[in-house]
Picture: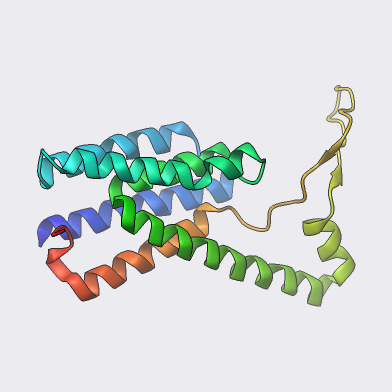
Length: 185
């Protein structure tokens, strides 16, 4: 029972830190993701079964990494998001990671639509369109030359926010229905 609470607490702290850092810095640095991945692997090695725990954690790491790797290659997400999910997968394992990811994509879409609708209602549809849907022209920084091409539209919200929310929902659901048997497979 204590192990379950420790697990949920550590995952909640990691996802909350990732969300806050992503909001403030607009990126998720390695100093947050790498220790989280290692800690997830160690947690499952120590508290689960040495024969299965590390493999379960590595499988979750691989699933988390694979879920956003192709979107990253296509320019749809940042590498910090990929590493966030990989580290989270090391904690959650492959199945729970997949569930949390699906829910996070759903939440991201709902929140993004809500933010864009709010901007459209209060600032106008043209502003919302220009801010979130159209490519922006590169503007040179002071003292630097202009870079040709267009930048991607502004992101509505950092992806770590719906990832954190979805992880908390999935873990809350699992704890409610499985309680202290969270680690029994």
